[in-house]
Image (cartoon, rainbow, N blue to C red; front, side, top):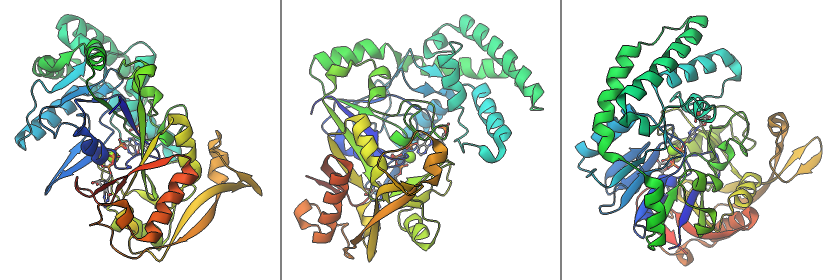
Length: 423
Ligand code: GDP
Ligand code: IMO
Ligand code: MG
């Protein structure tokens, strides 16, 4: 396996956690490269279900190294809680989890600002996860962030924190919100720093050494391509580069060392939060996808908006990420449907649109042009070879790959490890 980047090719929740877990068998190291605990990556092993937020989805395989890369924004308390939760469930976490000393921190004032900004936006809100992600990345780019490495120097950490809390409390007062207590946050986070210390490392140098030594590295993206800060449906996006390019900046691995890009997409489409979604189904078909696909947010529990597969969006994703191979998940969710639609283009003011427009208002007015397929109406859950899938299911999958402009690599027919077809 070459150094592999795995990205979400839609609006997040494509089943990245499951596919990472499956691919981890062949990897030595799994690296999260962006996002924070806004992510919720589900992995089912046997009868156990785990939802990972900051910890890479490779953690369930013993003997693998898991790295939280420099591009991730890390909430130290959320990370400790996740580590404790996994340990309580019998997952070993010791030297197998490292956090980059260059990663930026998410602190309570980021969560406060996230909530305040959403409240101020009213109807125009983004529908964020309220984990403080946007404000944390704003501080990083604005060069006022506090980083993981600062946790190792308590005096300097406290000084930086004092300044940021003071600044945030000015804003809080303006908007009538309760001010934060520096003393409380300082004590809590210095205590967390002590517990996290053993996981903090120069992961950039380490990953490059591993890569040169021929170890297999798997880079795990969070969110999805249409939520990318540059290429997504701005401003209804997250605050990082979710696309394959982000994997280099977020891990320190140079671009020419990346050998393969895997794009994960559902056999239909979902989205959580606000923003345009051309193929959204607001009728019984949407409700059916939500119920059958158990489409409720892994982080916030919010019901996911559901719709047909959007090949305009996935074509855009394949182009942007250079996706070599598709992993199509949740095929089993479509098993009972007599007819299935796929959006092959948009129509805007009578004209055909074949790529995702930059203008979010234009996208809002795009109407999907559908091609209809016959459903296979047979269970695919027990199928393990592509050739054993019903003919109509194979036709559908081949069409998704063709319309997206790349080839099929994996088909997932259930949440568990075994429920996977490799091509
Ligand atoms: P991620 O954020 O991309 O990792 O995806 P989530 O974990 O948020 O959401 C995907 C959901 O679909 C999880 O509940 C998975 O257990 C589940 N899942 C993944 N692949 C399949 C599949 O092929 N079939 C079914 N029925 N569920 C799946
Ligand atoms: P995974 O990794 C789906 C969405 C939020 C909101 C927007 C901005 O599990 O696929 P943020 O809190 O990041 O500022 O919210 O992005 N969002 C996700 N949607 N899956 C995710 O992660 C998401 N992470 C953020 O719902 O619309
Ligand atoms: Mg998710």
